[in-house]
Length: 184
Image (cartoon, rainbow, N blue to C red):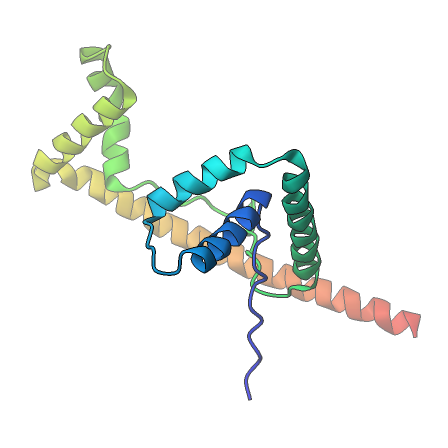
């Protein structure tokens, strides 16, 4: 059979929520046929919470503390899904090449900024996008060719990088196995 799924522990509840749950149960007992909407009930509950003494509030605060302790203990024992950390990028790995649009932007950004010095970066980027979409295939071709060359170069560098990493991994394994054999 498969693994049993462990449910995540219920989150701890505040003193006000404990009070509200208790007040709702009492209200239902006293007036079983009366229906109050959420808004009306919340308003009544908040008025009642403001009017109760500190001694009564202390009772609900104690319940909240117990609930918080219960939650923290259950979370310590909880072995559910944990968020995975992102892998750090290797600084030796080759950088991805710019797209044809990015190359176009690099060439035309300064000119567009000179023509419109009071534009924000967002406005310049939007104008650049419009320029790119309205440009003909003939105007786009040099940027696309350059991007294709850079992409090909990137894949070559990536392949050599991966081979280099693989060979380094084997060297580490050999060194590690030699060390373990010496310890025995």
